[in-house]
Image (cartoon, rainbow, N blue to C red):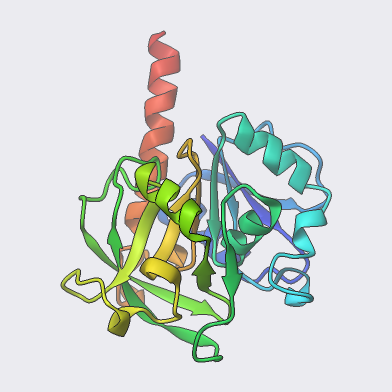
Length: 238
């Protein structure tokens, strides 16, 4: 089992993701520079948060043209497990692997705080260790996290269970008061139709150890690791 963490100029959460995989979960992981051409040796890829290319033009707009992105698209289309966190989510939107776009937070300010998100679909490789409807306490840190998609696409996403996380109260109530950035339908994370690509604005890598005041982020990585372990067992038994 081997993870790859993609690094763009300006990435600043790459070491956080590396630390979680390597030192919290004791799994093999490598940094992948954005000009590296091959991803075939990795079982899962993480596009971390940060400000790729300084967020010039808009977050993820330049990263989408980076040499590695054609490989990322091919990797995802072949069923590879791909997790985009914060700026990584924005990159996945820009490159078209996930539907929709990000707008500036409704209060026009950068937000850095803990929020609560409700698990809307626990049948994905990234949420299988969660309970349906479980509330996770995970931090956000972004200026452009106001997710938007057209009404027809939203209906399709709902029908196909692509909405994975929604901002909520500590008790799981979905309302405007607990929507930190104005995101449509309180959306905090979505998947592609196949379910192998997840984009989420909250940072699970920032809450995997007791010292960080929450360990709820562990569930995302534990789910991913367990899914990969299940794949390995299937291959061996076959």
